[in-house]
Amino acid sequence: MFSLADVLAEEIPNAHYVGGIVRSSLLNRFSSDIDIALPASEIKPAAARLAKRLNAAVFEMDPELGVWRLVTHQEKIQLDLTAYQGANLKEDLLRRDFAFNALAYPVAARPEIVVMPRENDTAHLLLKGLQNNLIVDECDGITDIKKKLIRLNGPHHFQEDPLRMLRAFRSAAELNFTIDSRTLAQIKTDHALIVSSAGERVREELERLLATSKSYEMINEMDQCGLLTSIFPELEAQRTCAEVYYGKGGVLKHTLYVLKRMEYLLEHLEVAFPKYAPALIPFTKNKALYKMAALLHDIAKPTTAKIQGDRLRFFYHEQKGAQMAKVVLDRLHYSRADIRLICSMIGEHLRPSNLASNNVLTDRGIYHFFRDLKEAAIPMLLLCWADYTSYITEDQLQQIIPRTEQRLMTIEQAKREKNIGKTLRHLQVLFVLFGKYFESPQKVRPTRLVTGQDVMLICHLPPCPRVGEILEAVSIAQVEGEVTSREEALTFLQQTFCTKK
Image (cartoon, rainbow, N blue to C red; front, side, top):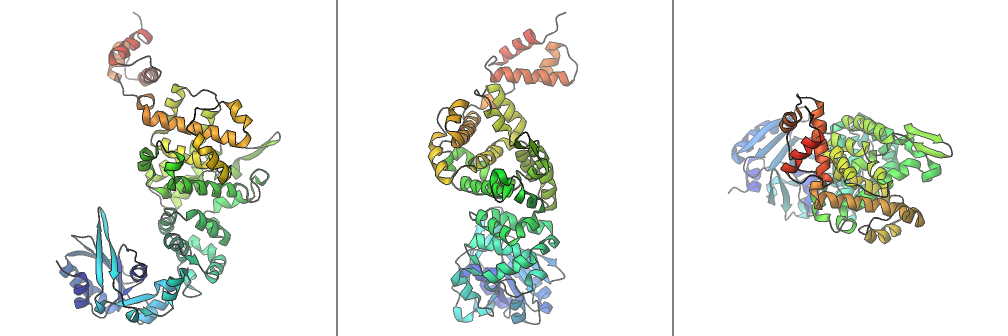
């Protein structure tokens, strides 16, 4: 087995490990790749030599910046060879975004490279045993790491690459660092420049930020700097919409509370749904997707706000919101599958409230809910939990969570408990829906007992929409317990739909 550090030292002895791999290693955190800087004239031949020694795939990733990427075939180790941005290593480091990234370590020092293989992904890597006296630190980045501080490395760096503003918040969220005041002030000055960043790059940073447990805090701080609504200009109108109802900050204040509750839910499934948490975990692996749905769920409230009588209403804001969200997500180059799921969650997020407006939840109504929502049903119920709980305080939430598993209270009982009663009843409705889905699957996803061919044969029908309607009627009969076997389903067809000759 070759020593990666030795191979690198032999083939590119004058090069340096730079940036994230050095910073992460000082924090004892693994990195997804190794960045190595060396003179531009050495990049291409070095890439060819290393590809041969390491048995790696190699390609030119960025001709303009002089970046070549290697990925080893066996362990999937990713190496990026990058030409100095400037005349030498010092100039390269001074042009990097933040001081804690302006660090370098000589390849010739042969630090131990710890490799953590990952299934279906590139390996994670760590430089072990770095000697402080060998670290090249042009901008006092080591001090910032000790202080857990993110500090801009130069006054014009955001203008050179506006995405760095978003990267500051993402890094703060991932590392539990603080952004220093001058850097925040510069973001307030430059925030509008973010619109020039490619949508897919913005999405990648947002997804990493939203995947952390500090996304609510960072999104709030982004809003204070003007960056949030530069990325999502559609949210700006929320700030002054419905302040009479939501208070200062309007709908945007509510949106951020929903994000906060979503973050809490995803980190505490066992508290919110102790009975169903294990079953819900597979649905919640993509935390960033849920938080994006929370950010966009009421995007259309300002455009649909109307006074009716003495009430402010938002008719069809969920449907209009799904359309507006699609525009935003397209702009950020989300996948079709993610767009479809998020927009389904937003477009139907009032459905559980509609179910809760009736004292009795019927099996038929629950079946229709899951039939219509399909794969978006469970994700949308989690969005609804975050939405409903955003209207009560933290203390009130902790008080009612144990009661969500109790028998569904009536509408009148809920009214007697005022605002927490309405929220509690809505949460109990969600619990009932989860119970049907996980414990009584035949009530929500009944196994088809008859086929379209059966319907056409027994009911003397040609292929037509009526066949589908009859199959749906059989499914409802199953849900309501009228039909429990194929024989009963065939009898049901003959007695209910067979045209008499």
